[in-house]
Length: 534
Image 1 (cartoon, rainbow, N blue to C red):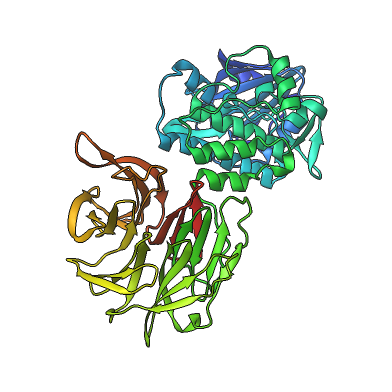
Image 2 (cartoon, rainbow, N blue to C red):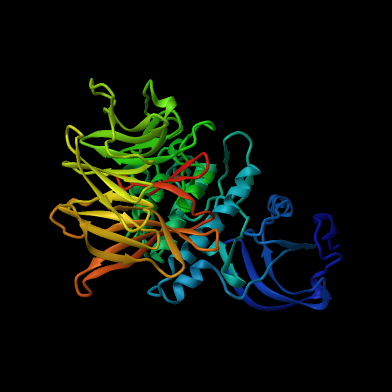
């Protein structure tokens, strides 16, 4: 007797005799997969992948029929006729990620496509974990490519619904992707899926199998369990992605991130905790600390910590409530905030948390309009005003030194080892620190883009004349944002766009940008949040 309708399939009353079998497209230990076509038209579906399962567990069908997600291969029907058990699935002629990488391992894929596939696989796993389903066999051969490079995960032969935190079974996935706890006790869990997902991220980045083509799997498994062995991550892998992969590979399952956190890392975002009434105004970095200037205080976060749900400490001033904070900079190992009020324009100098130094309030002389941006080196503080002026103050006493008139209103300002960087919206302007009146060079932005925040990337070599520049840009007439890196080209004697660090932001309305000593890049939005990028 054939059964299919009881599995809520769009194909009803389907029988084995209704199918034409073609080439085999996949084989496993307990099943083979063939491409099939239909002798009659069935709901507009021309072909399918037929999985012939030797030892069918109804779990796979029952789990599959409940799933409906664009990044999960759809169950079309289930046929059971005597000893024959067929599961009909969506068919794709493009094969799997494993097939794609195996055809030409040297073929590079774009960062955009790699991110797309990683995100889509993550969204599928997130959907499963929300429904308390663990896949248990996440790997490149179970990630199928559909038209327009859409990725879907498949093969739920090992999938299980879990009660509590884990499921136990003697059936296991592929050794390259299996977490240490599975080798020890066959204890599957959501974190074990995360471990395998980390291997998948590595494979998408390197286009090679985890641990390469090595066959001594028993020796490798022993090393994985007893010595913490993990595959090598190529030097070409971005640091923030390598950091994420290592988090997924933690030996302790409790220390691995959940899939929601993994997705945020892939997207390049990780929210800091900001109270709804504390709208972020600007931010700056001091070593590995990130200071977020808000309405009534400055929240300081330690970016070396995994948990950023609360700030490390707050910087507050009794007079703060009467002022509108506009920008913040690190000055002589302190935080310096420029703020305005009806009674004046001030710099507030906050000491570090462990310092006994008191907060200073310094009037900004010869500044009669709103001061909105600030930067500094170890000799001077430079304040930008709405009146197209630069106010320069001497350090350490903050005495007035000079005032420079500009041609246009600035979006932002930063001080590097040798130059002062001015953000003139559609171009970046470099002026020498010894003569802020003179422009050294200009850096045009790509056509149609404007800059919202800019800074020099910290470098260990202070002798480097032209330090790399990081710019947060938005697109005219479009809600689109990106972060670009510019580097000096000696041959062309100019800055060139060398890398898009992150793109795809829905809204380019940024207020600030900071880079900490551990490579964390943080952006302040015009909403009640701050994100950090690795």
